[in-house]
Length: 404
Image 1 (spheres, rainbow, N blue to C red):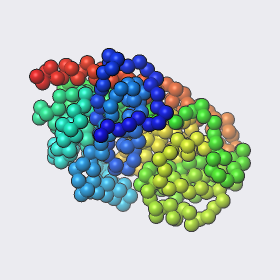
Image 2: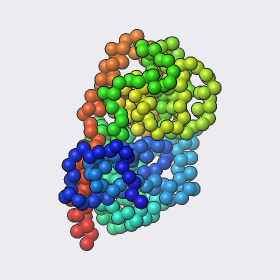
Image 3: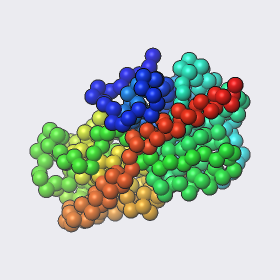
Image 4: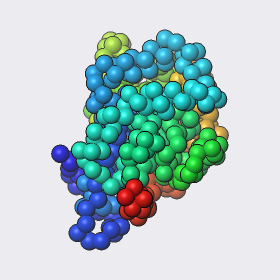
């Protein structure tokens, strides 16, 4: 059944198709972490706002391939990042440098996921296909090469540093976070025919991340001094990386520093941090309302450079990348630092010094927050999605005529 628009979502733009028509969009995602799902949710809201008559179907395509495949992909990622980071780093570099490694995803792995994608396309019969998960993109491109996909295909890239793992021949348009990633995408797809459109859409985040919203530390439910520095440590739904180190470093910044640690679905991490019983440490498990948490804080500490980092910037919060994860985390951290959107630290003492500096010199903190707010103001994901719908309406008809 089609999903329903969230309560309170209202149209913000004129329809891009004749009044009374209905556009059906199939959004492909995967619960390998939660970043892909959060991007899919933001995309769904943007679609509904742009087209009130739009029917959106969101499908976890990896779940459709079976529990074994889903568990295998999640386990492989967790093991690689947590226990074999060098292997993950080498894999990440190999995908970018060697065509035969990319072929593994475009063909054998794509073949494993393609039946699930094809079944959903046949069931939903969409006018537009959008993927927020790279292996779903690979599967859709495989179907196109086989002549089984005759509709526009758009891929949403949520990392600040676009990687070859996301890019496959057959995509019509890529939505990327920041203009700094355009050159990387163009270099990776220069041999693709036809050439895809690359659109800077901004962070794919929900409307609740608002840089004009006032900080609300009182929502923590405990007394927080007005002059406190409130730091959110969030490292994804799996709670991977040096979360404990980040919490310790933040608490070491002094009695005016309060820390909100988001552990996601990592219950072991949540138990370990809760056992500290520190009066300036507030431990949170899984939450679907990151916007409210981000609104409570001044600074967000992250290690992946994906949706959490995007949400921090969209809310106008200072962003620190601490001990970035191998591969995509380090790449995104470097891109964010070059753009002036984040500071990057790999040592706990350096993080403590950074937070202490901001406590003593709030004008520098405000300057970093202002840079984030300017970035948020310059990028409107919903407007980019509206433009995609306009192009897709015409492209869908052209592809159908070509297939006929």
